[in-house]
Image 1: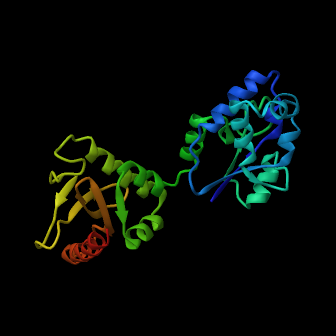
Image 2: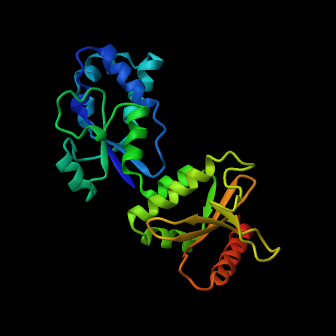
Length: 247
């Protein structure tokens, strides 16, 4: 779970219109369920709240802006620097919400002011596994697949992504339709289809999966060096059969 902290100093814009515009931009962000947006009560001490927000809560637009800030998760500590954020989170994976950060010493990728910068933050901290699943789209993975994938070196993980990307750009009947070069149908029975993504560099691997009505089932990753690939395919068939039934 990642944490984001409303930066009260960034709310001190020269005029209310710029504050209002920035607040509305923040309100457009569709926060991911695993993310928490925090605010400290110091935000309500900003001049715009005292002069422009609190006296005009009868205006529906003004009330909605106030309500947005009020509904952020309360944080007793004012987290206004990267050092404090890292200590609070016990991690450097965090960010700041704001309107105008000016010259504050905060890494650019941690400054969230709108939907675009929020999306960029997600991309910046995205793991290779998350990147792969996001690219594939509708996907179901076995624990076996995820565990093996996470154990691979970063460049090997990237090579799997790259081969799936190549496959998707062939413009065949489906994104991952077999063609015997990048993807091959290696089914050994009529129980279920087993497809094999062929990866050659930096390590020769075989990714076993299938694709049904746009949904991709990722079963396992095996070394091509295995002398008995039929065993790998049988294992993949069994795993695919199990997750197909569960979905």
